[in-house]
Amino acid sequence: MSERTEADTAMERYAAGDNAAFASVYDAVAPRLFGYLLRQTRDRARAEDLVQQTLLQMHRARDRFLPGAEVTPWAFAIARRLLIDTVRRGKRELLTDDGEPDAGISSAPGADDHVAAAELEARLRRELQRLPASQRAAFELVKSEGLSMAEAAAVLGTTTTAVKLRAHRAYEALRVALGDLVGQLEVGKP
Amino acid sequence: MSSPRLPPRDVAPSAELRARVMAAVAGEPVPARPEGERRRAAVAIGAGAALVVGSLAAARPSLAGRPTAYVGALLAAWALVGVIATWAATTRGRSMLGRSPGWRLAVALGTPLALVVTSMAAAAVWPSPALEVPPAAHAICFAMTFGLAVGPLVLLLVLHGATDPVRPGLTASSLAAAAGAWGAVAITLHCGVATPEHVLLGHVLPVALLAAAGVATGRFVAVRVENG
Image 1 (cartoon, each protein chain N blue to C red):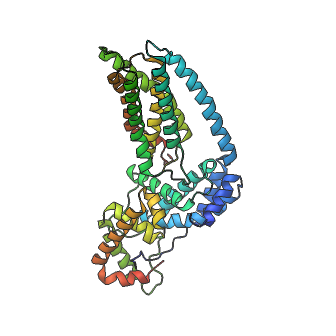
Image 2 (image 1 turned 90 degrees about the vertical axis):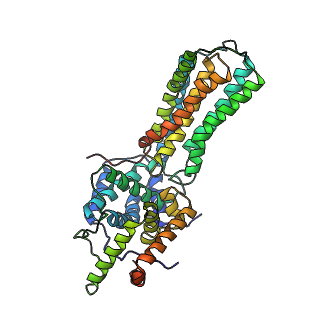
Image 3 (image 1 turned 135 degrees about the vertical axis):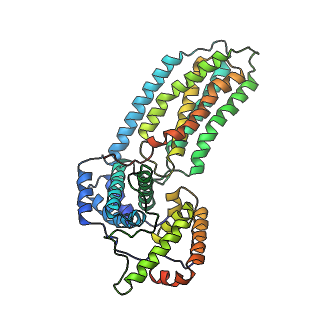
């Protein structure tokens, strides 16, 4: 069994009746969800709306939360479902083109390499969009959001082996496409 | 494996979002788990008892010329299938994301299959006389099995609503198969035709179709985007 995270213990306390514990759940989960949703939507307001809905879904499941259950894959799975549903409903579209990111998103760690980093990100984003959706989803959850293979498998409703395979294929495809930039990408670890 | 990663960026949500979420949570109280479990148990017991009484009234139990041992054995076997299917469809193991897709698929496919196998076994032990069963009899039992499964299906969807963000269609399909098994149990109390053909067409086929149609009811067990 995996180690209990701060989010796990906070949600457990909340389910057991500690109302104040939801603030800890929020603090442990919201920044990661926001980062994920911002990457997907490239729209700060939309990402915040989806974070809010995800947290509300978790709150509504308070009385059903299973003792010992992991919060992170659950939260990401809800966020991903809400994102997919929103896109399907046509409320918003995922940016799959080369459009500029939201003005509120800072794209680079420092001012000096702002242009290079933005260019790099645009290229990576283009290459990611060329990947099959299943490979892209696995790659993003594991490499960008830092989920374990098992957590990503739970979020995607598949096996750990399948996630490993998909993430590896995505990685190899990116290596072929971005061979000259892979070194820079590794420097830019979040 | 070294890997390319997306470049870092400022990903902090606004402080206003935190206040908004906390206000929304405060405005929509949800009971803690112990109270929720008590409520769900009360609904399950109350509605379950009402369904049993309603199904008995609707099905009007009768041996209708069938051997008592045949009816008893088939009822016991199908009730066992119903119990197992309900347990398998409604429990989530240790994950909030529920059982694996393979597990749920096994429930959806395995439930009608188990009904077929047990009905064939019962028919082999207590062969029924060859009868000319009019197609209307198949159709009536087919419709009644569907009708008798509606109550259990609604109850299961109420108890498991908005719980599955990953594969809601599969979860709904397994719940529909379990509900269908209870419909098949109820119709067995009533229907006097024991030929294998009739049991398969009138009593088991609706369960398989319910499991297939369950995919369409997935939205009832999916987490949903709020309107507005």
